Length: 162
Length: 234
Image (tube, rainbow over the protein chains, first blue to last red):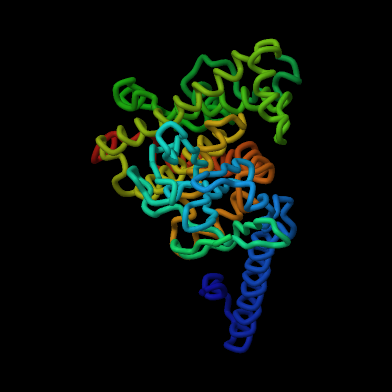
């Protein structure tokens, strides 16, 4: 930084270094204030409270769901399947780019309208750009009701025997 | 000549070259041109006026956009209802909305063609290299304006378009998830996302674009106007 030299003033070294020191300290203060403002602004834009639907919710009683049924919950974006091995829940959000899939009963296939991915009722990719199968979600039995937590994924072989 | 007129227009009658030069020099809106412009520089086939047309479509977008803002609430479900209202009930609503949409499409195309023209003319050559960089930033701002405006009708196309777009940002390593969260103001495309995209679309991005365009034009002016080939106008 050449702040004083450019002025071509007949300054002694003491005065020169004093001015340079003050100029640098001023620039540093502006820098720190600017950085602080930037960090605070980004932090401000991160909401403290989200008024979104809770990730944990009850689905129903296991005895009401016959074996081989896929229950569709479009509001919560969740599928509940009762396979012969037991119950499992999986997300209805496509693993490609996050669109909401739908269940096509006539073909017994889960279809994504955005880019045409197709999944089997166990979540496996049948075809299309989806890179991964539909992940399974944590499913528990509480007071005789099935409870799913969309924030927790479990392995693809997890089933709830009920 | 009365005193009020003389206080606004400070040059004499346009009967000499000097006064004609002063008219350009002393006018805020005309001073984007050098005082003397070569005929070759304003020939249509040199630039096809693509930069100017991009700026003109931006002007149309600002005017129609401000009109649309008088009827639009960035909230759920009012946004969609207001869009339908503009389409079916508001006087001249469909005209304004369609003009805004077509001008937006035109601006993206014109900015792209402008860059193609500059590239093939070699107008990015020194000392104009940094102005190309500013031009790239302006292209990015144009695309971002186009994208943020896409959410505002709050229809199915908008909702899933933004779901897909923010999931693309999400795929970025490390920075992806926080970027998506900040953009949406939550975990899913919701009312927060609509309000954020609205503020970006109507305030933040247009301000940056105007600032960028000012610097862009100012630099062209300081480099002696439109690029006329190597040796520039000699």
